[in-house]
Image: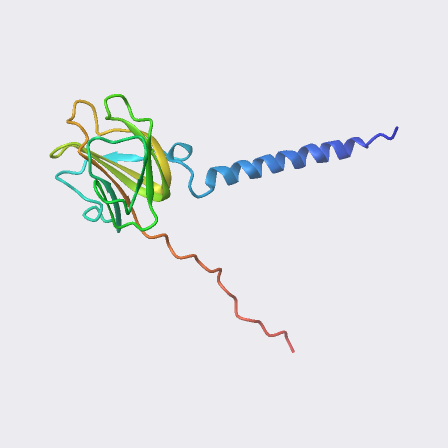
Length: 172
């Protein structure tokens, strides 16, 4: 029976750790990671009756009902869904028994979620970078019931091309 030199075992161990570290960093920084894997959202309470466009976002996907359901909402379904965001779908899950806390996921990255609960009662969850989902959203304790939820976003930035260096002439 042949024995493998000890230095090959150490090299194999080091390479396996390098692969694990690489895969972990790819998983953490890949697009579409939920907010819980990165930083927590910033939660503010803008006054009045804001919309995504009044908050500076190009797209809005509004579920205009206080009776959220655990299901996937489509942007083109009409009825209680109003959207100018082509290709976006929102899935509501983990809805609390009282309908006041929920989780969500989306097909396109979302920059903010506005949970509206009556006049001047709302919570704006802002994500930087934009995410594909979050858990435990609500409008705040002791408030009125949710009247609607708006998911806000902006167009994806155009891809950046690496800078090209002008060709250099070899010395003559």
